[in-house]
Length: 91
Image 1 (cartoon, rainbow, N blue to C red):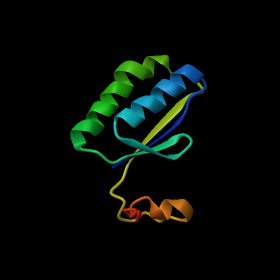
Image 2 (cartoon, rainbow, N blue to C red):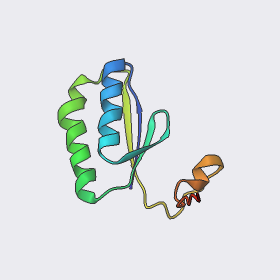
Image 3 (cartoon, rainbow, N blue to C red):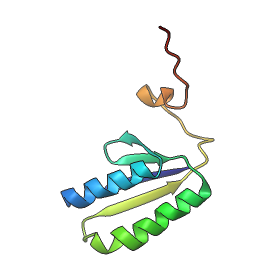
């Protein structure tokens, strides 16, 4: 799993970046933090896309962090506790 955090000053670029993360299977954890729990191939394609399509557009104040994690030692509080649980709805 990847956790991608970003701070991008340009509104259009930030919107494109967030949409790209969502299309790659990303789930928004916080406003600028996404969880990508997808295959290794999709994760690698995501890195290539960031490098080839976005990197040249970042300015000196922008930052992107990609964290690789196995979630074995993750501690969750609040709403985050329920993200990995299936929800069951009854009629």
